[in-house]
Length: 210
Image (cartoon, rainbow, N blue to C red; front, side, top):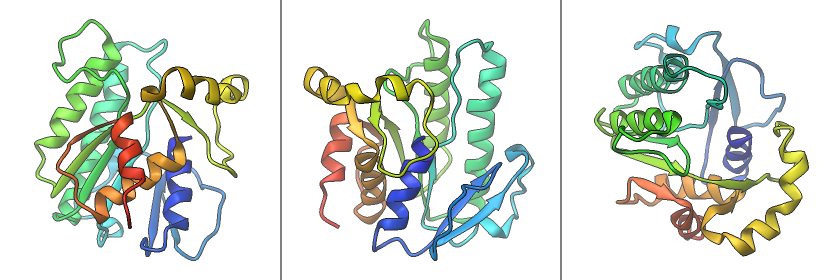
């Protein structure tokens, strides 16, 4: 859901020249700016994969729910894959910006009781040590889908209509995917000194002038 929403913003933005979608299955869209790279296993990507070269930024939006998972399995899917992918991107694009979609409540200390928050925190911390020109760690909470989105979790069909209520009651915990995508793009166009991007900062960055 997040990846598709961010993709739509990138395709619409006048200052984005080209988008490379890296995924396990086709996105099901065509656009003059869009190229696709289908990968069966992200951990098999090579450091010298020049298909991934020539880009100013990577918006890493992949992720899974931790529900029903043991820590080692969740670590492989969240930490191992993300770090390997980031290292490949860095090898091909040393001056690029890496933006990682984490989540509200991520544990930067890596020592809390909540498993997913610890693993996300460890992932965030390691990304900041890799050497990218910029690393931004987005921590959205409840997000409103963008018009035209197709990849929406089933649960969203039942609670999505409550967005106006959530926005009224917990404004610091709600945003639209339009805002998330626009904020990511603006982080690249206008370097932001802040690494951890919580919902209130997403609102600010989304309103930045292009």
